[in-house]
Amino acid sequence: MLELEWKTMAREPVDLQEEVSKLLADGQRIIHIGTDAQKIDRKVRFATCVVVVKPGKGGRVFYATQALPKQEVKGLRNKLFKETWFSLKTAMEVDEFVPEEHKIIIHVDANTNAK
Image (cartoon, rainbow, N blue to C red):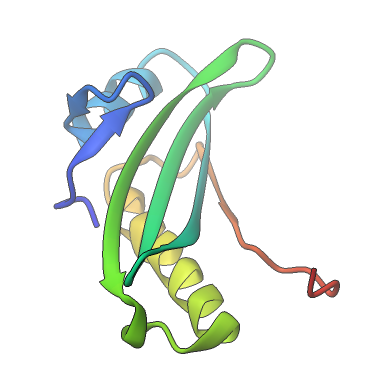
């Protein structure tokens, strides 16, 4: 996942590892990772976000997108599995360079209400 083109919210390309490492050098941080998807035409576009938060002070958001053909995403359950996998894969790669004292929280679209 780190090989994807990561951007800031201003759509500026960044090296995710470099940017996160800089932020972590400035003190305690919490890293949130999540993925959401939307069907667009014949594709399903996934956006994965990495948010580095300094508690009580705000944070920085980085994101990467990727698209799969609609036929590769077979229903809601499969879409949720793919979202979760992209978040977990990103978290495992980020974990390689984030010291243990920084929390990594993975967000999933899990809800008992199907709506």
